[in-house]
Image: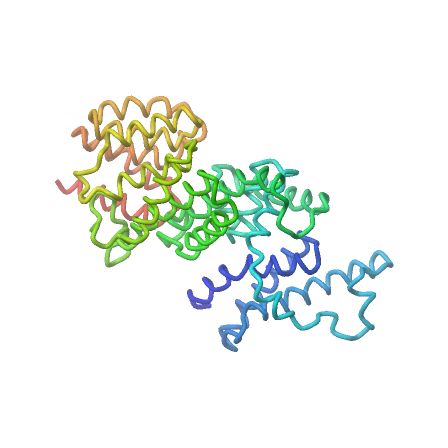
Length: 412
């Protein structure tokens, strides 16, 4: 199927799942039915063309698949579900999709459902990435830095927990919504990150994922505009996504931040994100997303890379590190320190991360160490770590970028 068709299916998947769950209530069975409908579309649409209303087509097919499943289960258990009892044998049990239901956007409701307090935080995030974000189990495992089999089990258990909880398909009341908000924000953060810098495969960016994350973050901001963390997350996404037009060269190659043509950055997104940061900082208190957004704003508001206020960035990262034990934050802090105090200081900070099992084998640690060693003039040592990073990354564009750096350094 053409790339545009794949993107369309990814975009429609959570909307279709929400509609089917709303109608039938069984999350686990609904997700299986939606996956079958997506597979059917991937085979049929290239031959027959995309339907006039692709969302309604997918809902109709998924509903039929789910009904077939319910009938099969009913026959096996010698009882029938409500939907089968109401339909005479031999007739199509799937009514035409209700137009209002087809057009209704259930994605935010689905998002809160997947982040139900009955689930552990990691399980809720994994399930939402699968159901709302459309990520594969492999991609989610990469985001969590765990084996794929472990992630598959986690998602399966989460679906069973949702089924067992009996939660209805509706926006939760404010108290329950607030209990789920942290998980909701975290999953949107991960979906955006996977779209902005794809962790595996041949694509550097997946605009469908990052755009969907921004759309849902806007919806969350409209729902709870008083939350500084919701504002911070939306601002972080906007300020980061604003650089997207300059992140790739003419042949799709990665262009690092300090080499990007800043005239290509989306000025409207920068202005909106910066204003969100300013307003949220005035409301306070500043949480991790708002602090990350403030860091992004410092980068985006510098006219040239050499104008970046790295000292302010170091200070913001120091606050962020006191707030959360996140190895990626510590890695970025080391880079910022190196920009202010020199690469030796940054390299010293990386030694602690060598003992952190969450990141010690990750390609980014090798890539950052290679970068700081290169800046120190230790070219052979830098090459060793660039080569290790290129071997470890599952992203083809990242690997190609690292190999290009290796080639240039060897050609000196």
